[in-house]
Image: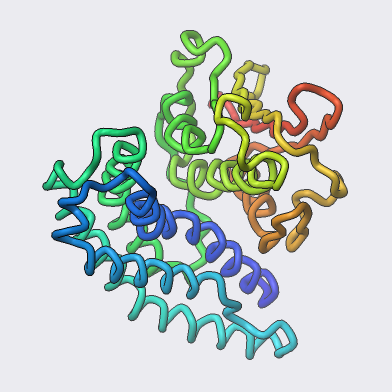
Length: 307
């Protein structure tokens, strides 16, 4: 691996894990901060600690939002900067993630902290997921600078694997022919497929399809994501389409490293990571823009069938 490739690999890993870090540290406390999510007993007993946990979570996300290297430096200097930031992040961020997770565990033991409402249920669900996932996130953070070519295949139910990630899109997500879909099994690396591919598609939909000025305040049922399956001789083919903001960038550059587009431009690593990792799994990902159709954007994922 060249120095340029190593730098891009680390930046890609940073981008991908940032979404998972946010889900275990910031999303739950943000959900608990929403009006009507927490009871008065919660604020009476935990008001000060709630503010502290929110402050910690926001600081952690700032660490990931900052540049970890100076692109004007030499490649050797950039690698040294990345290594320094990784070391600092590992020593300071991981312990704080564990502290935040411990707080969420404590909250979950006190059901009366959560109001009997949709917002209260959502906060409890996000905390439950955070507690279940934080240890794996901390482990992966400790290895963020280690590039690996390994692919650990296991047999997975395709529908359940997709639902674990795509159901968190801020939209009405439905699965075409769900009964027959639920019978499909694939052999692939679940960690790579979910955390390096599907999470980037989820993020893309939340930011670029439904996070724009036109769409972010629309009702949930107006925002649609259609997930469909078909079989080809060599591949399991999954299409993930949404009816949100049409794509107005350069379709041929969508998977290029650093390419950004739309109102909420980001790092430019997300869809490049999805492409790299789908190919690592022996498959591929394609993008189609149909701005005048009901579904304006569609991703097609191809997972290889075992012979």
